[in-house]
Image (cartoon, rainbow, N blue to C red; front, side, top):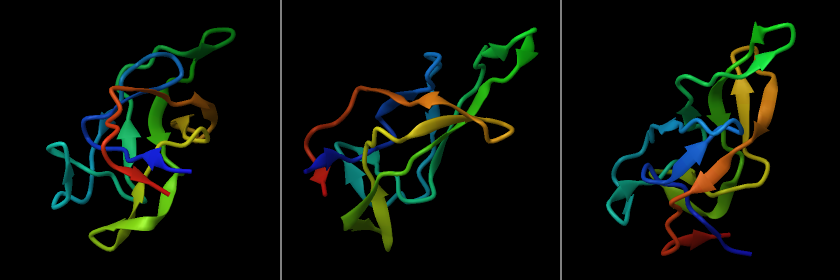
Length: 111
């Protein structure tokens, strides 16, 4: 099954609807004008308001991407593709919920 690659232009949100900032470490390969994310790249979530009871702040701080391509390499590292297991994490590394994807490019797919 082929799945779209994640680029800097892809919109990824934590499960609470806050957009993440995607910062690719590889910048030489572009898909539709945007750098592709590779294994090890993460998303930073600024301003997630999530709290645990009795109000204990537990905001999402990072998005972890687990969908590394087995066939597409970018600058020697596996390209990242969208994955249902991609997850938002709090600063304590506690999982907060799945990544919400939008504005996904569909021209380059990977296995």
